[in-house]
Length: 315
Image (cartoon, rainbow, N blue to C red; front, side):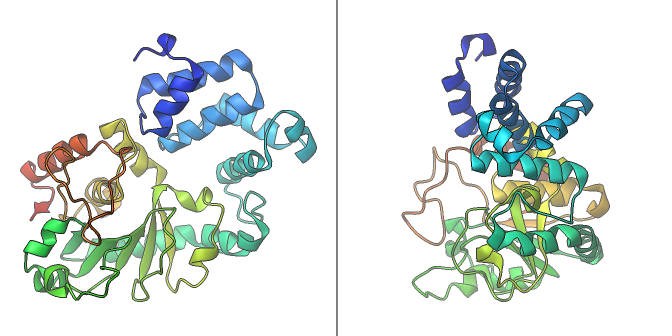
């Protein structure tokens, strides 16, 4: 859809529904350039970040000038308290500020600062483990796994990656199908169910959410390092899809294309959801529905290409 034919409600709605195409981003940019308001700039900056992209130098200057305004001036400019925190998080990320986290509610600031200050160390540690691993299994949550007996094969890998609620909540033992081993647990930002106790690393899907997440209370009891997907990797995924990638796709893209761990050829199991062909989406529940924000067809096409290029083992 051409941006000149889109009114504000249309392109904001398109973005919320997962349209991360260039015309939608341009609509956000033009709205800010036309209105020159704090609200319009913040909408644009957030949309840009959602795509894994960063502000140019002039836009960074605008961000920092806004951030230097007093809290009450920002309220007078039309920003809500939540939007002021978002603005603060953007400025803190730009400045790599690990000394304060005023963009996070008080109850989560100490944890947010701890996570931000240790990201470089933890990323290096994880990259080292991934580089040394001879085999990595990335296990999606497709119900097709229930028809297999891949559990032992999955657990034979050096590292095993799983996503969100990968076990049935009714207590059924499906380990013969999906295995038991877990090294890296990937969670959506909104996940609020119990954290797997045996996860050695937690990876939050999204554009480096360590600098964006505001409520960290649900992760206060986590035992291991908590990391975000690097912005550059998230940007590469969005560029392939014109949409926010699913957790599984974002993880595979990161593993396959990050040059620091490019020796990995992961085994991908439990992938392959196609809304036009499959009535059930999730291994955990019949009623668990797939979000329409992801471009499932494009994800499948890219995964098939990776398989043909021998970049992954699709099982």
